[in-house]
Image (tube, rainbow, N blue to C red; front, side, top):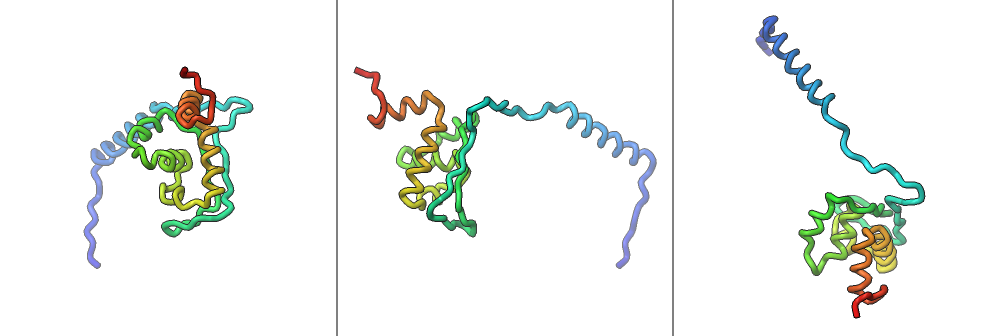
Length: 140
């Protein structure tokens, strides 16, 4: 195969090197992404082993990891469909597709929902308890 190769001029090499240095400097000056600093005794995630695994889209789910929601997750929650809110919230907090959550065995689903409720922010947990009638109701 015939191939033509052109040698770079010293000016072209200098320009590319300058661009690379600028890119490296921009990357170096960029702050590290924010991270939560752990608080002793506070768990941020929990692994839920499934009694009955679920296969979906070529992947077998044998466990689900529930994590606490972040501020960023609240915008995703505003788009929830009211009729699927429970499964959508569990999907958001586990990273599993909604279809997997919906396919869970009843016992696995209940255990997952208990973990989801435990990891909700306090105010949301209180609101959920009031709406469900299972928790203390402060309205008279």
